[in-house]
Amino acid sequence: MKLLYELSGDNQALAEAEIACVGTVTERANGIAVAETPNPDETTRLTETHVVSELLGVCNGTADALRELMTSLNITAEKPYCCRARKIHPAVVDISQLELEKMMGSLIKGKVSLKNPEIEYRAVFSDGQCWFGRVIHKIDRGSYSERDPKQRAYFHPGVIMPLLARAIVNLTRVKPGELLLDPFCGTGGVVLECRMLGVNAVGSDYDEEMLAGCRLNNPGNICIRADATSMPYMDETFHAVAADLPYGQSTSIGADSLEALYRGSLAEIRRVLRKDGRAVIVTHRDIRHIISEFDFELEGFFEQYVHKSLTRRIHVLK
Ligand SMILES: C[S@@+](CC[C@H](N)C(=O)[O-])C[C@H]1O[C@@H](n2cnc3c(N)ncnc32)[C@H](O)[C@@H]1O
Image (tube, rainbow, N blue to C red; front, side, top):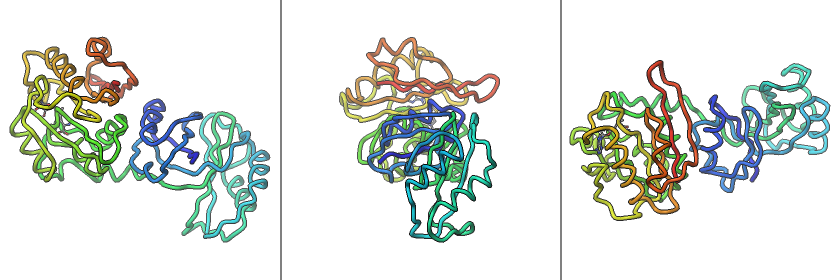
C-alpha cells in the first residue's frame, strides 16, 4: 500500500532512512515522504514520523486542484469524519487552513464529527504540491518520554534514551522474530526496545554492574558478560547489531584506548553479523574513515547536535 508519512524531526534524511524498515520511499517533499509499505501495521514502530495515512491522491498545491482531486475521488465516509489541512513551508496554497478544511468537508459525503471523528482525511501542502490521504496511525512520540529510564528497575546516567534506542533498532531494519545484538548493552535500553517490537535481543557488556542492571530491566532476555573486542559468539550469528559505544566519560572502557576499543569491536561486529545484516553504531566521534578497513560500507550517516561539546553521530553500516 502507498502510504503518506508526515515526518516529525528536523532531520529528513534520518526519518526517511528509518521508514526503510517498513517500506520503500518513492517520493519525498519537505516534511513528508511517500513509501510503498507492504504491512501498514508495522509503521507504529517508527519514531521520526508522526502521522501515517493511506495516500489517496496527489495534485498541485492549490485549493482548486484539491477540489478537483477530491471530486474525482467521490468519497463517502462510512463513519463520522473530520478533515485537516496542513501547510508545510514552502506551501503555495493561497487560502486559510480553516477554509481548506471547510471545502474538504463539503466534498465528502457522510457525517462530520470534529469532536469524535473515527476517520480523519488530511491534505498536506508542501513543495508546491498537495498530498491527500486518510489517516491510519498517529504515532505518539510523547509515550517515549513517559518511558523514563529513571523509572526502570536499574538506572545509570549513561543510558540511551528510548526514542534514540528505538530509532537505531529501526535503522538496522531488523524484523520481529530476528536476532539483534547490542555488544555495549549497559542498562539495556536497546534490548528493551527490541522486546517491545518482538525482536529477539542479546545484550552484552564487560561491566558486571551494568549487566546486572540490564538483567533487572530485561528479565527473560539473554545478557552476557563479554568484551566487545573479543566476543563469544559464532560467525554470522546476528541479523543486526545496534549499539551506543562508550564516549569514555560517564562509563569506563574495557580497552587500552577508545581507538583500540572502536577498532577491536568493529572487527568483531563484522564477524558476528550476517553478511546481509546492518550494524548501527552511535558515537560522539565520526568513525566513517575507518569502517572500510572492516569490510563495511556506509549506508547512512546522521549527526545530532546535543550540546556545545557533544554532537552524536549515527553510522549505518552494511
Ligand atoms: C554508552 S554506554 C551504553 C548504554 C546503554 N545503551 C544503555 O542503554 O544503558 C556504553 C557501555 O559500554 C560498556 N563497555 C565499555 N567497554 C566495553 C568493552 N570493552 N566491551 C563491552 N562493553 C564495554 C560500558 O560498560 C557501558 O555500559
